[in-house]
Image 1 (cartoon, one colour):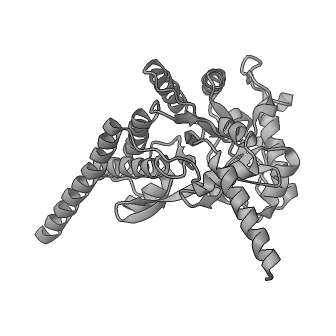
Image 2 (cartoon, rainbow, N blue to C red; image 1 turned 135 degrees about the vertical axis):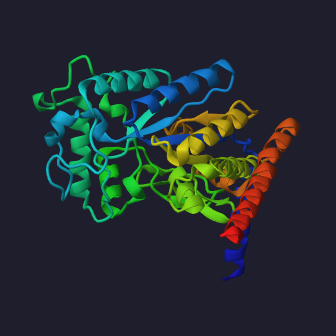
Length: 371
């Protein structure tokens, strides 16, 4: 490279540094999302929890990736046929009886009205890794028909209508995080704004590809192992995907410690948004549900923290220039310290998790020696 090329690179670098110097520190976004949307009791639990958080001055909005079969009664299961599947088959069942449908749709409407984001989790929870774009479009067309109760065949009561249009479904997470080129062709063609089926580093800011924002889950440390920032992956890492109520307190403490460490690192670092995914099923005897509530109570409402939906995060990202996003990724803004009282509150669960883990390990060793 000649002297002119070197000077040009230096000038570009200096210009970029100058642009970064003007960047204001971004908020710390925290996104907590849930897959499934079938369990009516879980809808009510999330609605009650978010209302309680609002009353406490710690607002939190959730994203719910709803499986399309949640909009179809068991009796009408034959309206659905997934790509390569037989008619009336779903890997996770269907929406239950008419009374279940009535309660579920009422709760979904209430959650949406209160600022929560309703997104798509496809329909029958199948692995679509090898699906073509046309097959994905078939799955999305079926989702829309189920959402809109588009045919008399669905036989959903007229009162059980979603109170917002299908156009508000702008986000997606693939079942099993099983994605492929066909998925992204379909998402782009159908106008989806974001996808959450990928995996990235914990300090990675979202990126946009072919018009779709990618909000990716991340690898976290948990009890000496690694797991994605999703409850099922903790379930596998901690207990081999077997329910283990004897150690539920250990698992809850470890998850809370992992999430708080993730938060602390990003809050004091480059402020990359936190991406946390859970399911409607009460994995690990509900310990993970409680850990997530503990986490939300500790971080939502802190200075510069916004516990938002993916739709809200997409709005924020759309308002930023590529240069600003590059500055965020580089951490080219004044960094923040953890609030003094909060720092101590964060440290306690981390230390407690370590103590609980050591105690459980000692108990396991003793039990083995006795047998």
